[in-house]
Amino acid sequence: MKGAQIIKTNEPLQVNELEQPKPQGNQVLLKVVASGVCHSDLHLWEGGYAGPKGVFMKVEDRGVKFPLTPGHEIAGTVESIGESVKEIQIGDKVLVYPWLGEGSCPACVSGEQNLCDSPRTLGIYQNGGYAQFVLIPDAKFLIKLDNLAFDSASSLACSGLTAYNAVKKAKPFGGLEKEHNIVIVGAGGLGLMGVQIAKAIYQSKITVLDVNDQKLAEARKLGADNVINSKEKPDVVKEIKDLTNGFGTDVVIDFVNNNFTSINSFNMLRKRGKMIMVGLFGGSMELNLPMIPLRGYTLTGAYTGTFGDLVELVGLASQGKVRTVIDKRFSLDQVNEALHDLKNGKIIGRAILNPN
Image (cartoon, rainbow, N blue to C red; front, side, top):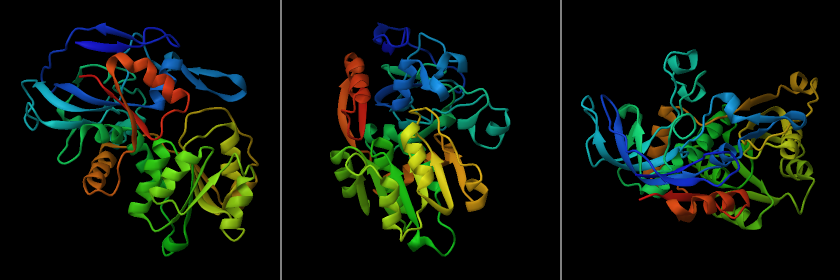
């Protein structure tokens, strides 16, 4: 089988002939029809994340080993199964839950494998979906797809799931649903999914910030009540205060989360406001520490989500309440072009790799 591998960070991925795995026990071999191209793949390829004061956080220090076949947003058909698999059959159309854990740490025991102390995520800690076939360690991590297309379903496993987790954390205070304000920073694939999810499960007023008018237009089309180009109106804190009678927003979900956006996100909160940090663009921010207790702020992160979250999200997508905005599709041989387009901001929504 063919697979695209990161041999060395910041060097072009190589499409190589790889040995096709044979499933045993509860394992499943999946023929990959669609693998989403995610910013996490970009960080993996670049070797890490920007930390505070110029520190670079290497993925290899977190246990990532190269060469590696990336790709964690995977949908496809079951090619073969191990002898112990019962509920999944050859030919089934499935979506993969990739956020695997080792199974015994406190996070795994509580059902939050995505926050495992020793993660085994597909496409990050073990080979993923940038290949014609991928070995799934256990059939229990597969969700059957009914009326969803492979391309649109694949991105639910990360960008959709992360947005869903973040929006769930943005739940309005009881009795205040219609007066609730959510600001979404970034109208990329996650932000656009976040708009749809918020509209599907809340009655909140949604404001989206970005520097790209085309992305903002898409956000408006998907249900955003207000959009603001933060390049044209750099004092976004004032803009948000003006939209909220001077109080500020109840929640801000920062899908960018860098040196610049994080400061504005913090400063646009009202009392009891919640800042949900999602993006991995990196950097640091200086906090006014007394303001956090004095105003009752909550600062939290959202990283992917649980298996149960993904099942719920697939349900919303199956009902037509959310959809993946797909901009471009690439073959396996075009993998480096896909990553470069994503890095250079040429993707509106999501890019999909079709290995077969």
